[in-house]
Length: 360
Length: 166
Image (cartoon, each protein chain N blue to C red):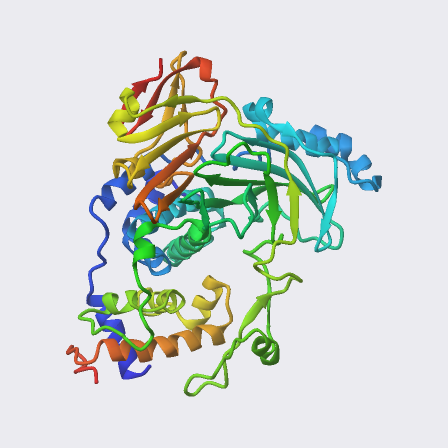
């Protein structure tokens, strides 16, 4: 190893790793609240009887219909949200050798979620461990980030998760996006760029002449032959939307709390919304910091409590910011999605920032 | 391989600062890095059966933290924070003079930051880093080489046990 490397390793060893204030305490909280080691929601929960009963039909079936096992998987994944999910047009699309069909969608106006059935016609690219990426949205790419009615919009989306039926080689993918508001949802759509398992994808080098056509130049570092730029071994262009599927979805009901409510006033929020799907806090500015580092849950009338879906993390399910450059207004929105559907008629209180707030 | 909850918690506690540093080398904010560590702890807990050698728990946890950080970076891809909009990106030639290694590492571009962190702080070899990041060895070597040049420039004049960096 060269002297400079030794010098840097010595510096690295001497340096103390600085973490944010309170990091160790918050980590202890996470460790104390680890769930029992059970399988991820939906995975492995498909009843063997359902698969066995339908496997023959799936193998000989040439038409791509929502097979019994997929319907079972969808019901399992939707759980209590099934009553809010809206069945989509019975239409199949193809992309990259996959058959794609949106089975269902749901929304509360700030969270938009689609349940998509995918079958691989060409190989064995699907699995239970894949992490699909897709966006459900109402605005086109051009409209995102641009001035609309004087306000910049932003939205975020999460990697989805997959439930996979090995017998029929069919996957159920779930995509979720969040926005300040999806409006009346009349232009809702699902945009898919590509479907692949990014954790296991193989790569191939892109030839330099192909790179130069895109205006990318590469050069070798000292002592090196050259730089290799790689691309995944799938036939797609990373950033192009290949498939756009319109969705039919209406917002589910929700409870709202303004700035004068006990909850709104405590959070300093412009608006707090509680739907069966999630809690949304819209604040002028960044909102209280405590919102980031404390769990959110709902207490029901019978005393049971329902946590938000990812209690191991400190940031919400979704968040974004919006601004008006002329007036200098800006705000932030934070969204926590629940692990189970909330019956609004049975909600007793909301737990946020370590305090319970009655909703009635 | 059987782990008790206490053994797992002890291992995570021991290596949590490293996990944070590795996540921070991928992400641009401490809050996001903390979130990635939280996600990594949960993911590690649910994937314990995949760890075959208890002695390898440190690089395993660091790798999960890096992967969670990348996942979070992709997730944040469409969210624009005002503080990000107000910052001007640093020009490649305007490298700051830095007092400590981590300060200099944070000034590197993200892809070089993470290989430097894994190589110098986590003592991983090129092969191991390549597997962790899912890139070829040549890519790791090239990023390290470019990073070394920039680090040398930023740390110029620094004295230490191995003499002054010139």
